[in-house]
Length: 175
Image 1 (cartoon, rainbow, N blue to C red):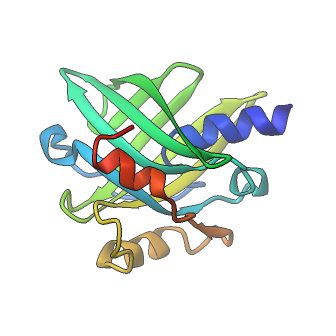
Image 2: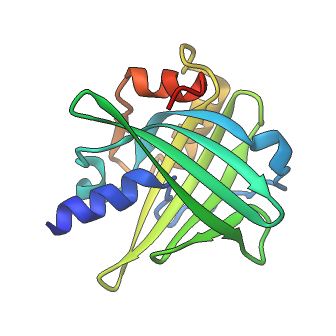
């Protein structure tokens, strides 16, 4: 039960870096808004990497200091979407979500890749996941991936995202 709850919460939101010191970007919401396909995740928590329900894609929309994250998962062959509303924190590029969750935009070129850090406070512990996303459904081996690898070199645990049709349907606006 606990593992499933954690995997659902962690899978829904974006990325956490375990004690990585990354330069945060000056976020331009209009540029980062839109579709993002999950390509890879890194964490030192095996439980996070073994989540059965993992994000295939995200669609970000901004309104004022708020961000809506629409995530799509493949659940037994069916595409399932969930949305969550977060609010900007004092630092640009950091957003707080219900349930003691935070998302930090660590790096992006806006057009090809973004690297996000997700932090979740659960049972008194902070869990961190770093996630790498691309705009493209096909091309994953871009300069952003090497930046992701540099940022997560001390993590030791990586997982490439599953390829599925749900991200494709999200990008086309069909889910």
